[in-house]
Image (cartoon, rainbow, N blue to C red; front, side, top):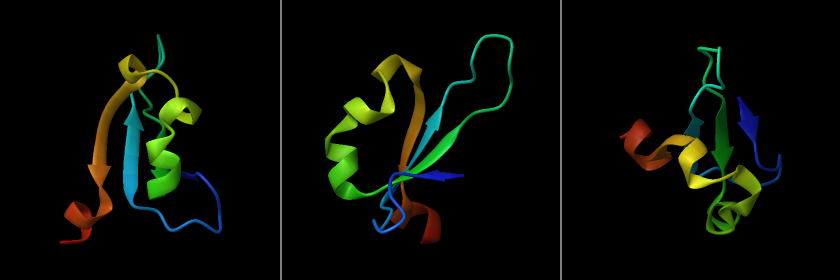
Length: 58
């Protein structure tokens, strides 16, 4: 799994739609600051889901 920066504390898990002809969905762990500047993570139509990590660990 990818992470925005090693020194950042992940708050969200972004899951991308698979590329054409693929079934693998790329996943990124993203901190609050990087999440707010989403341009680093592609367009909205490429994203399958965004899950707050607090929901995963709860």
